[in-house]
Amino acid sequence: MMTKMWGSESFMEFGIFGSAQAKRGGPSDDSAVGFREFVDRNISAEKLGYKSSFVVEHHFTGFGQISATLNLLTWIAARTNTLRLGTAVLVLPWHNPVLLAEQIATLDLLSGGRIDIGIGKGYRLNEFDGFAIPIEESDERFQECLDVMLKAWTSDQAWSHDGKYWKFKDVVVEPPTHQRPHPKLWMGAGSDRSVKQVAALGYNMLLGQFDSVEQIAQAIDLYKREVESHGRVYDPKNVAVARSLYILDSEEEYEKALQARMAGRRRTQELTKRPGFEDTREAALLGTMYGSVDIIRQNIQELMDIGAEYVLLNSPNGLTSLETFALKIMPEFSSNLTPASP
Image 1 (cartoon, rainbow, N blue to C red):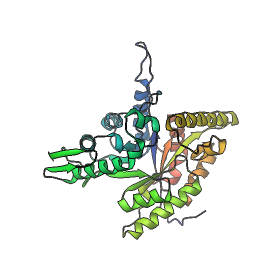
Image 2: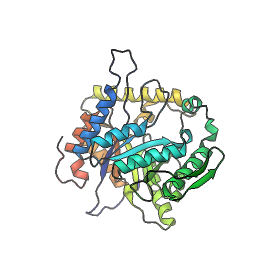
Image 3: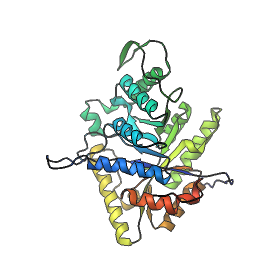
Image 4: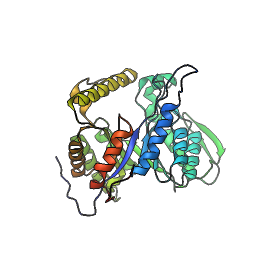
């Protein structure tokens, strides 16, 4: 495994990553409680010292995941002051690019430039089927949507677009974004080809929900070399690594958490229909940091040693593990020299 030599000025940053869930029930059920709890978790995360919150976009799951991502982030933006607001990811093939550019610009403007836009091509077959969009068109639709969005954010004069999937005539998109020329763009990468693509485009990179530390190390090393080959300065904070965090103390808790993760992966596989799915304990453990405070501390040190300086934590037990992490682990690795307050 590669080891990075660190100077005294090196430090890590931590954000959170995840999703809210809404209960589907009758008139007596409070379906919004899961979303409200998620908003409160973000407010608390900001107070605990977390830098950002990246949220998903999913549709037609049957178990209430976030679909209107920018709507939820707008609500969180209004309740926070410094927390960066990330999407991981907005699936461009499903969206009208001009409407999406307008919505993102509005949130960026109102939040004072706090939005980070993670974009992707999508992978769940049931979502493409639900939108009646062939998944085979995802690459072309992604690229055309991205091209139109960039034009929308950077053009001050009326412009037109005559593409394969979208046509616009003499439009000026407003409002302007707060960040110029546009909000930071992030892309996920799961192969050498995609790592090179992200670097070539000049975007930040998202890694790791189900990747091993060795895979993360290889991707970071390749991305750094590719960024520098394009004549740009590599910034390790432009790579975010997602990990599942669960701080626990007993074997019984550990086994219960692992079984829940395996069940969640199976549920996602039913929606995705991806070939090559491995329904094993070993596969489920990739991307996890489950264990005592001392074990989690070792996990973070491993990531730091391979050059990961920005980690997004998805906590299955909500604020409990995030709070313990912020109070007992974060100060050792971040620029904050004193523990955060809950």
